[in-house]
Length: 150
Image (cartoon, rainbow, N blue to C red; front, side, top):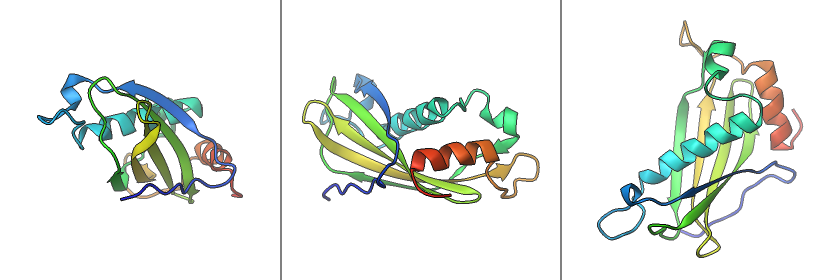
């Protein structure tokens, strides 16, 4: 499948850089497909930290959870041990109680996107486990990163 850039005009890009380790590869010496998801989670954590909401405190501070309700990965080219990967994450859509972002994994060895991942989260109350609006400060920061009108 060929990579297609869907980044909205004006969207802020958050970058995370990680190196493929031995634990990330399969017997063929290629990065195992499931290992990518740990990298995508790191990129997600870094995005929220850059927005001022580190995962070490965000859930307690706002009394919410933000579970993933939809996750799609598309793989375009293999990454190998010791490859440096740059994850470029951008917000694709912000709703009242949800957000969609995409992380594109660029391989520094090839200069090409090797995979991309789209995640949808919803905001839920930690006590009731029911959907609720994103806290206004978080939503405002996500909308500003999206680069689109609220």
